[in-house]
Image (tube, rainbow, N blue to C red; front, side, top):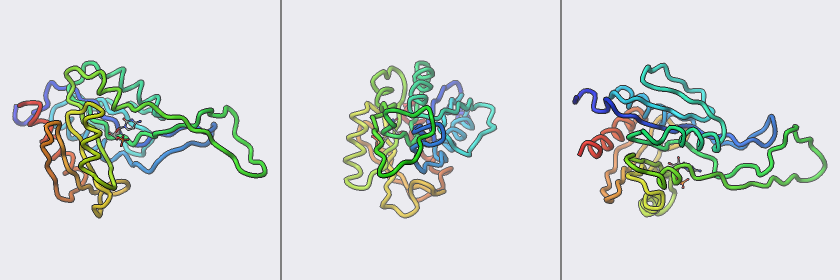
Length: 220
Ligand code: C5P
């Protein structure tokens, strides 16, 4: 129905940061709060979808009956959880701030300090979104991009490279947009290069705008 435009749809959303172990007590991480992903999940659930929310370490939680929350820690765990659940979802949105690199050798013991410098060797994590794009069948696949220069061009490049249906660009140049803020300013770009820019809004309002754009395309 119009009230529940996502009724009968399955949605997969990733949210939050990932933590990459250095040793049992230390990790590499980032300042993502997870807010955008959780807002997208709540909104989809309110619109009738069955949601699988795969979240990295965050203080956020959800009580929504239509959301199955799976907590993971590392990018590798997020990769596995995504692929376990991807085959029968209708829409997948990658809102997580996935660590690009992980320590090559996580120490099983706490690393002791010693004189002089310590070098940490890093290796690449898998690009989860790109791997989902490669095995895309019916899914409407959406990514995020946080760019500081040539924003539209870079976001469009990612959309093509990762085989996405749409990408949500948030510009750090825009006051109030991005990490650690309650607000966001986005540009929605689809694979036909239809580009729509929105005003600065709360992340809850931004989630509504994003779903409106997605729903108009999956119901077209
Ligand atoms: O290439 P870049 O990291 O800028 O792309 C950002 C998009 O890719 C986001 O949607 C992010 O969630 C996703 N991503 C991912 N796995 C990675 C890196 C980014 O899914 N290892």
